[in-house]
Length: 328
Image 1 (cartoon, rainbow, N blue to C red):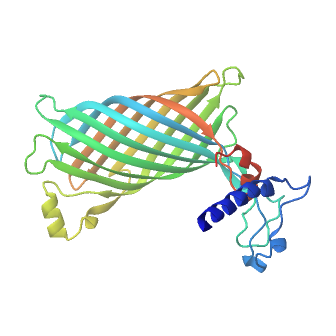
Image 2 (tube, rainbow, N blue to C red):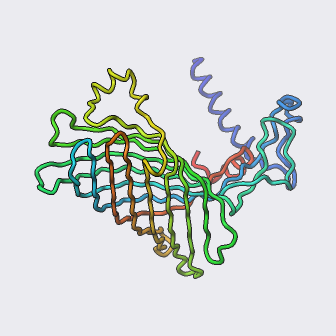
Image 3 (cartoon, rainbow, N blue to C red):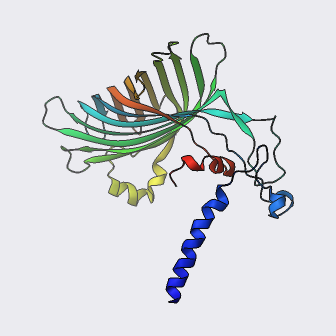
């Protein structure tokens, strides 16, 4: 009997709550402030509900297929050639600057007023490669699996009359490995690096409302870095027990010792109002000469992707105003 009474009470309470919170505040009246709700004082008081500003985020998911030329003297003195399969995801959004027209509330917990600006752009991408290459005789193969992430903070150059040109620094980090079917003693090698880069992004959108296609060119050059490098003929068993730690095999590099360049050209084609199809070509070259070990990889890939645009909402005020459009 008590359980039935309790369930009846809960059902009545839940039916009353939506009506209590559904009422909109009067026109021109803000939500209750923190002082009215007695939620603290001074710099640590809970601020009034605010709207967080977010810029539109562009995301493209790519599938790439192409050819690869590889030379790894730690595994073989010969040059190998084969195919490379790549999955790539890239995101880009405009940066922000302080909004001086909106005063910031005197609370350390309050959001800093900001607004998006076309003079800055944040860019990042993640990619995974799986490739298979054979030697000239066709009796041995090298398999490659690698992953890489890049982050760019770029500024727009003002003197470009057509399109947008962004240039700025970045960070690139990669890890992967190579496995040879021919070697018995040392069949595999590890690759890892962290580098400072210089990035360039140029884009031009056609001025036609019925077909606003986008042409893009992006490049990245690695400058200074930290690379993992074992000695020639040194097995990983010897490497670990003789040096005491794999971390001691990381060396500082500059363009004469380790160099990497990437170039990508693409076009975004709107398929009516349903989605955006992206087509592209990507070239990448990586080379290093560390501890008398030569490593070179050159790849050419055709890219096919889907591009989407999204915008985030944030802040208690935005969530309150958009609650009818939210699924939960």
